[in-house]
Every structure is written in C-alpha cells, then in structure tokens.
Amino acid sequence: MSMLNMSDVLETVNMLTEENLDIRTITMGISLFDCVSEDENRFAEKIYDKITSKAKNLVKVGEDIEKQYGIPIVNKRVSVTPVSLVGGSMSEEGYIKAAKALDKAAKELGINFIGGYGALVQKGMTLGARRLINSIPVALSETERVCSSVNVASTKAGINMDAIQLTGRTVKELARLTKDQDSIGCAKFVVFANVPEDNPFMAGAFHGIGEDECVINVGVSGPGVVSSAIERAGDCSLSELSEIIKKTAFKITRMGQLVMREASSRLGVNPGIIDLSLAPTPAVGDSVAHILEEMGLEQTGAHGTTACLAMLNDAVKKGGVMAAGSVGGLSGAFIPVSEDAGMIDAVKAGSLSIEKLEAMTAVCSVGLDMIAIPGDTPEAVICGIIADEISIGVANTKTTAVRVIPAYGKKAGDTVNFGGLLGYAPIMDIKPLSPEKFIMRGGRIPAPIHSLKN
Amino acid sequence: MRAVVTVIGHDGKGIIAKVSKECYECGANISDITQSVLREYFAMIMLVDIDDMSVSFSEFVDRLESLGNKNGLEIKAMHEDIFNSMHRI
Image 1 (cartoon, each protein chain N blue to C red):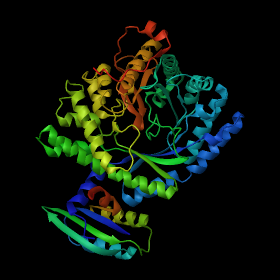
Image 2 (cartoon, rainbow over the protein chains, first blue to last red; image 1 turned 30 degrees about the horizontal axis):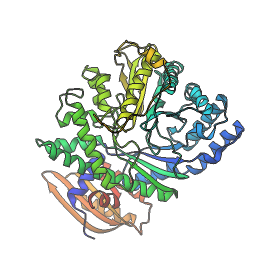
Image 3 (cartoon, rainbow over the protein chains, first blue to last red; image 1 turned 120 degrees about the horizontal axis):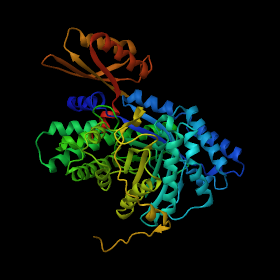
Image 4 (cartoon, rainbow over the protein chains, first blue to last red; image 1 turned 135 degrees about the horizontal axis):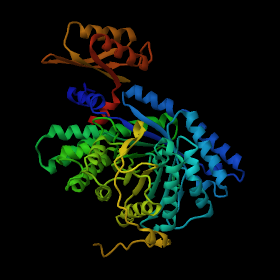
C-alpha cells in the first residue's frame, strides 16, 4: 500500500490538535433484566455486580484506544435497562437503594455518569413506574453520577399529561434538593418524547428493551471541525456548503466507526450504533452556535437561525450515515445552552429567547436542553414548557426532550455554574402567564393523525 | 501493524536524524518518509512498522512526544487505521 497522502494526514492531525475533534462518548449498554429480585438489597447487589463485571475494562480499553489512535475519548459511560422495568415491585426506598448501587458502580468503574434510572410512561403508568418517578428527586440528589430520564409521550401513543404533571414536580423538587449546587440535580434529569433506546449521550442514555445483553454505542462530536471547514470554504453557495458539511461529517463519523469497532472487539461485546452528533462543549472552538454564525448569521437567534440549523442538521446526518455501519441515538446537532459558548453569548446578548430555542428544536436533535430559568417559576409553567416541547416531537415524529433548571433562589439575569462539561448558563426570562388549568386537567393528549398534513 | 508519525514545527538541523534515532531505539522500522519545508515550517510524515518494537506502542508515543517537546516540535504517533478510515472510502 502506498504512502498516505500528506495533506490527508495533516488534515486529521489538525482536526485533533487544533479543532477539538474527539469522540464524545463510548457508552456501554447493559441489560439489567436478569437482576430482577423481590428483595431490595438483593436487587441493588445484583445491579452493582452485573455492571461492575460487564464494564470492568471499559475505562482501560477506552484509554488504550485513545493512546493508540491519538483520538481523545472524552467520556466512558454506562447505560442500563430503565430501572422501573426491572424493579416493578420496589418501594421508593428500594428504588433509591438501586440508584445508590448504580452510583457506587459508576465510582468503582471510574466513569462520570451512568444512565437509566428511568421509566417509559408514554401511554400509561404502572404503579412501579410511578414509585420510581416519585423517587427521582431523592435518588438524584443523594447520588452524584446517576442520570434519569422519563419518556412521557410518543407519536403512536400521544402525550401522557399525568406523567408531565409528575415530571414538572420532579424538576422543581430536584432544584430544591440540590440548591446548594445551583440546582445541578435538574441537569441529570430529562423528559422525552419518542425517546431513542440506544442513545449513548447523558443524561438521557438508557439500554432499551429490545437491545442486546451488552453493547457499545458511540457518540461522535466535532463542532470545531465543521466550523473550520465552513470558514475555509469562504464565500460559497448553500448547496456547496451542504457538500462541505457532509464530507466533514463523513470523516468525523468514520473515526467513530473505527473506535466502535475497536472498543466492541476488545471488550468482547456487540457493536451497537453510532450517534451522529455535533455535541458542543463550553470550550472555545467547540460550539454549534458558532457554526451557525460561520454559516452567516450575525448571532444565533437571528431570524434565519431555524433554516440554518435545519440545513446543518440534515447535512450532518447525510454525511454520517454513509460512514457508519449502524446509526441511532439522538443523531443531530445538539443545542444545549450551558454547554455551548456561542449559545451562552447569544442568551446573554438577548439575541436568543426560549421561544426561538423551541422553534430550533423542531429541526434538530433533542430539545430544550440545559436551559436555566428563574427559581420561582411555578410548577405549572414548567409543565407547560415540557408539554410544548414534547408536542413538537409527537407532531413531527421526532425525538424531543426537556432539561430545564429552575435555579433555586435565582432570578432572570443571574448565572448558574455547574463546572466541567455541563458548563454555565445565564438564567433566561420566562413568560409569567399560567397554563395551570390546562395542565391540571390531566389525562392524555391523543396521538396525532398522520394524514391531512398541514 | 503500522503507525504514522507526524512531525511539525520550525525547521532546523537534524530533525530527521533525531526522530529516526528514536524510532531505531524503540525498534520501529521506518518504511516510508515524506517531508517538506513550507516557508519556515517543517512537516514530515513517517510510516513505521511497529510489529517488532522493543517498547510498547504507548511508550513509543510518549517518547516521541517528549522528544518533540525538547526540540520545539509537535510529534505524534498514531495507528495508521485512523487515517485509512477517515480518508479512504
């Protein structure tokens, strides 16, 4: 085989050294179905034992791959079967013991987050699922690394408004119980519509019910690489820009595919999916908002932002699909506020409102993510924010999610700071109008019709 | 197995000699070199065989990196598969 092309080699090295290219996460999905027990101590023990045995080499293998290929793998994580599905008979205390077992396992493995303390209640709620949801505030505030998600709606089932009422209360309670850390508990809890069951990204990762015993899913990243490629392209049409983004996404994803192949074979588990994502971090040069600005917006939030993002998101998927063996998860551009330097600036400048963010979520990955709102936001308003976002997902047959932080004791204009990859965020202004009567009606919003599309 | 060694930095005397010496001491066999100087910048890519090395690949990576640090160069060694997967369909 001939020598590699010099400019190709330098391009790769430059992506890694100058443009923050990394693999955002390798996440091991582990089934907990064989951990079922009617005894709560035994249940927690089986969960701990299974996770620490299946994933015992996860961090080591990740680090070996980083060294061999020179690719940073930022996070090594674990997702498990939604705990409510395997702990149906548990009391709230029993579930909390299981959460502590997950936390202890994460610490033992040296991973920063473990996901799957959740429930799927899009159509109805079992007693076990209700007890698990009720336990979330205590479970997440008394643990450090456990992440939780609840799926409250799907395009096929409609929207479970009773579940939304519960999750609104959960968010408020989490904010209160973790008030000493800027309500960080809320950053570990996501409410979903049409949740993917193979997502490697936190806080929403869990190991779905139709999955293998154990798999490796990989989440790629690379906003800095896309942004630089657009910058280099200079003045060109959007058709040309779309090609450039596709080619860049292809290259990024091929790297993810390589890491998945290596990680799954070294760990002796089946390869799962690649999540084709542009996942920002608060670091300079790692922002999705800056890509949009490089594409030609004065600042993210300007009229045109939704169109710009829709094109970016589509091109990333088109390029990535060809590079990956199997695609899944959340796949698309993420637009969290606190984790993206450009988003933070846009909010601070008053250019980006929660309403615009909501519109943007109709055309890209996930949803209202890592948005800090005033601590005195009423529960019903939080339920309203969740219901709005969820209905966008349900009506458009896509995943949407809400991760809002009503920062306890803080008001619009203040800042919350979580540190690390979770970043910091200015607190956004929220309309004070009450949706309480609508929310408190409860029941279910029926599944939408999928003909007569307008 | 082969690895790609990239050396980037300001041009100066003896860069190839120093990097080759380190490869030799680690037991890496150089199978191809391409090198150029663009203005004052030196860029070199070496393809090395790493099957019979006397040190682990991870030690090789660290030794080259510290050689680079001592000489004001950025030296990286990566498995060739990353380049093949990124640039070849």
